[in-house]
Image 1: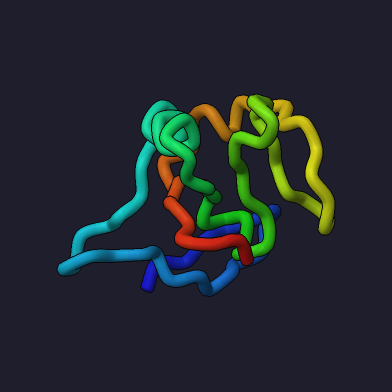
Image 2: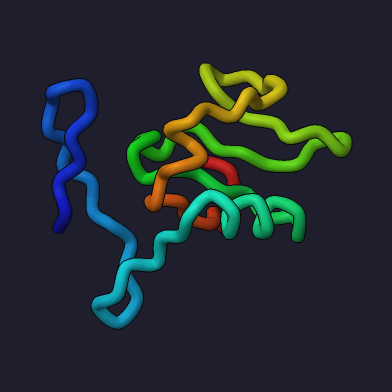
Length: 88
C-alpha cells in the first residue's frame, strides 16, 4: 500500500494496481479517457470527487454538485489519475 501525503497529513489510500503494477495515468491520458466518455478521478481526491464530460463541458463533481472544472496545475502534473467504472 502506498501512502499519500495531503496537506501534511498521511492518508492511507491503496494505489490501484493490476498484477502488481500501478494502474494510474497522467493528465493527458485522463483527458483522453474523459473524451471517450469515462469518468476519472485522482487517488488523492479520496473517492468523493470525479471529472467527466457533461453537456460537452469538462465538469467536476465536487461537494455533491457538478461544476465547470477549472483544471489546476496540480491536476495537470498529477500522475495518480484513475478511470472510474461508476460515480461514487
